[in-house]
Image (cartoon, rainbow, N blue to C red):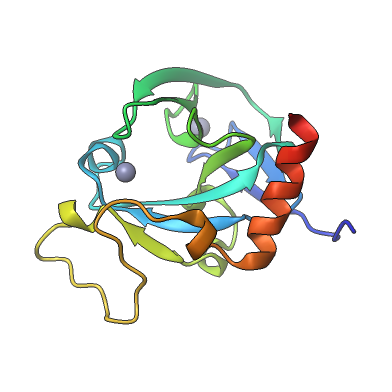
Length: 160
Ligand SMILES: [Zn+2]
Ligand SMILES: [Zn+2]
């Protein structure tokens, strides 16, 4: 069953445009020190999407490979005009791409469902008590909404 979904996104200068054709699987805020340097901010908000639901529709991206906190590598894709990172491909996330949530239109629709690497959180940043916080990483099997976990696992079967 394919839902009729489409959401657009773009970089800061508008050179790179993309769309996703399925809702993100999960959105999370990462407070790790790597994400701070990458964004120049206290945390990043990322949305995980199935790789087959992501389409670059305009412009060109360049990429660079970095080692993530997990020790696995990650390739970051950025606009070759304004340099804004639009998405990333983590080796640890099979079949998924990690979008910079705030490059999506109406990004407010996707608040973080978890805050990770709270151990590195800036001490002056106070999260309300009802946030789903983890010292480091969580187990997706226990954290993701069941429906999205199922959607991801169904997709994994098709790419093996
Ligand atoms: Zn740009
Ligand atoms: Zn991080």
